[in-house]
Image: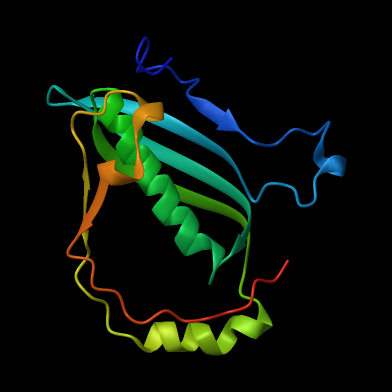
Length: 151
């Protein structure tokens, strides 16, 4: 629909199915996102808003931010838009007790310059993207911080 009607207010994906919640091992944490296209100075900008009902702030949220930011860039490219904003809202945000020391270590680190995401510009369909089509330039991460997953 985004290609046919980019200004639709119905560009929504929901993972929440009330009829199946009882059958799920864990209900979806990031359960709804919506794309919004705004034309500014003749340029179509694609923004994404994600609602996350439950957010593991140390392990889950950083992964969710990276994943949806990548998805936003990919959808923008194949729908002839430029990436706009990523807006992330939460229902319940929590830091598990067994992640407190790791979070303190992360907070003690000096931020580094942000990397740059480059996508293969020849990809014109979302489902045609391959691993090789995504490049992260100037990524200089701190060493990984191990933490157990809490469910």
